[in-house]
View 1 (spheres, helix red, strand yellow):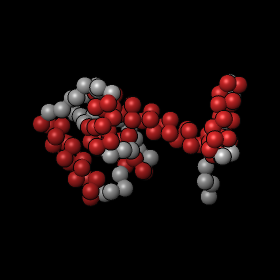
View 2: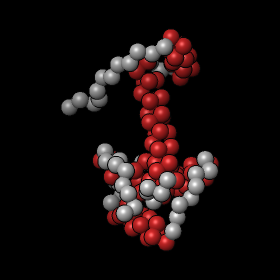
View 3: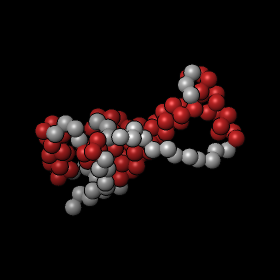
Length: 122
């Protein structure tokens, strides 16, 4: 079984120099450094994307957190720090409570099974 897939990319010289600096500081090889940085960037992108979906009223807070692969509290903190408009009503509360109940019943969560689709509130 393969552990991963090889991905190649052409990088600007300045970015390669930055990678070399990080490799030296972290005492890690190129592959490890790129994997760590990419994982961090993907996580940040997902937080930003799903916070925006929440702010646009397309997802409840709990659904956005689940799809982003973070805790409800972490997304709340992220949203608060970026001053995303809060879209919350009684129906959202009901949906969030249902989602939280589902997560307690099935703690692995959908995001770990690779499903991070945008769902509407309707």
